[in-house]
Length: 331
Image 1 (cartoon, rainbow, N blue to C red):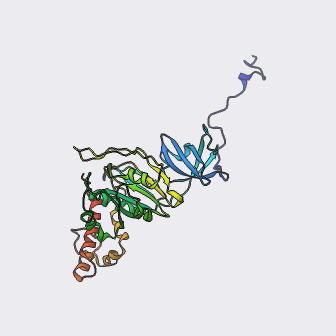
Image 2: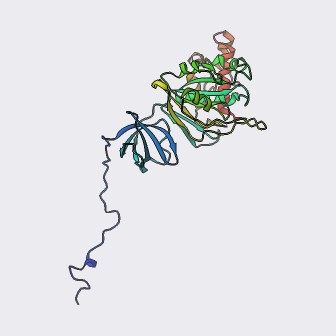
Image 3: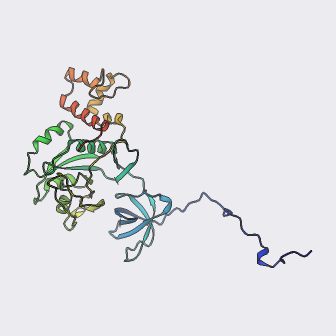
């Protein structure tokens, strides 16, 4: 019996089986990739700034994952990096981050949201009135700054509506630096604090972050809004984070959308004492497993207070921050 196909019939050839492509552990080195900094993220497109000042639009390589690139990241670009209209580069690599600022939506939310990376100063912007300051939100932002290895800075706006001293009394024992700004002024005190640093501005809507950014970076054109007279809350005017260079190349700032909660599910409460070395030295006398909180039995901080080795304001401020990590935030 003759075969169905002769030797030269294409249908007689064995079709390749699935997954026959040789696998290799070798990956591209991207030695010729161009370094850049991510300044904005918008619907899957990343605005990147090259070291020579060229602005490039890029997409993310699939192996990096869905949320692997954020504002502030130092990345490596391949493909077209000319920045010409209609061109698109590709983010092939993300450099190791020096700092990462995270938050969760709520204290019981296991999902962390990375806000920004490679920032060394967190500026907590709070209005003294209209809207009223929210100390719990400020506390939580300070805790997040400590956890991320950033220096906190408290920036108070609208001093014409309320006395700054009322709020400063709460934070002075923490030794958190502060600055008071007035709309329409040259912002020289704030500029001095931002000089030579990369800072991110955090605060709820209506406190004046975008107004500050417009004053610090002429031409930034960040939208500003008003505070609802009924709810006392501001309207979201910034919809995405953006990194801007200060005039004269004297530092960077990141403006972020207004927030209404700052969950700290990702923060280990036991680490907080590490950021208070003057108090940590007294915890050697604590009982095992001491949480150093208000109701902690036989806490070394209480013994230090009794001996006059520290101040009540300093211990109370630390314990207030500790408690802010352990309870849900209220408006």
